Image (cartoon, rainbow, N blue to C red):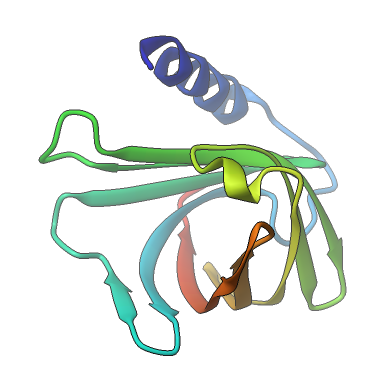
Length: 144
């Protein structure tokens, strides 16, 4: 676990130090401000507490996110891969993820950016579990 954490931390530092020209609208570093994940019988809201933090870094072709509940020692999620942006559709092609059921999956979201705010909405499904069907609504704020 420590190796994974240090690897992700190194990727974060490299991404923050890279300057890119001709950025597309989603390139940069984002912090999750709020989210709502809804299934037919459950709704989860983010943040659950003041200790929840999620950062997403988007380069020209790749994305990486890491989240942590800083009140607990080993409470974190991570994932990343490649992405495409075509009009209002942002698609993540998941190459690695804490939850293996998402690896190899491509998930498309409706994407809307207004100033420093990015709203992503759409489905969040696991390929190996047809019963895992969630609706996602995330609001991100650009921090770089």
